[in-house]
Length: 211
Figure 1 (cartoon, helix red, strand yellow):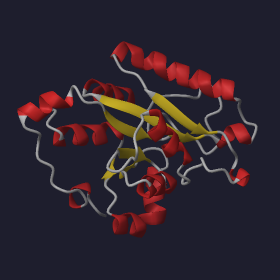
Figure 2: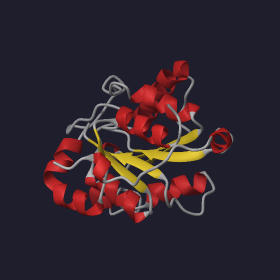
Figure 3: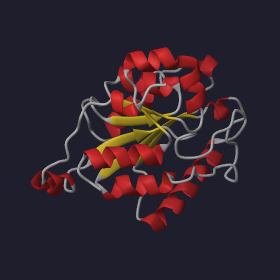
Figure 4: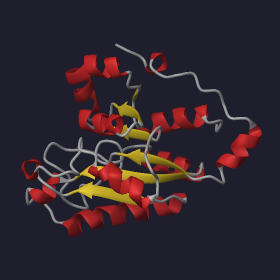
């Protein structure tokens, strides 16, 4: 089994002056939703009641927000196109997420979602880049090169790579299945692995000089 430390470049903590500047400059991160932030299901997350945060994920988002990150979500929600739930239900899930983050002093700054079923052949369903293009436009960025992204599926990794992002895979959600099915490709692409979002965020912020 491969190890994350073998796949990542060495990053030194930022000097104090740069660390202070970091708080005044907004940095962006893009997260997948199901399997990264909340529990996933092969039968889809169809209701607000089924939207259950993974342990440590909300606290990880709060750490990112307090470190000066703008936080975006890019999520395929083909359950809408398949008729399993409505856009209104999806929005209610995201309202629940916002309410859960509020006591932690954090928020999600933007959510891009694809409501289409696969047969729609749309431009926004990951690994197509439409959702990431929406995020870039929202934050008025010419590109997303070097932006950290976190997912639990191969399509998450492919989308990030297609946009020049720094992609990482978590074992939560469909992560273990992704590793089992695509281990050679992940190693070839040098994709770092983390147990969950909490571990990834701790690693990211430590390398940026935050402890």
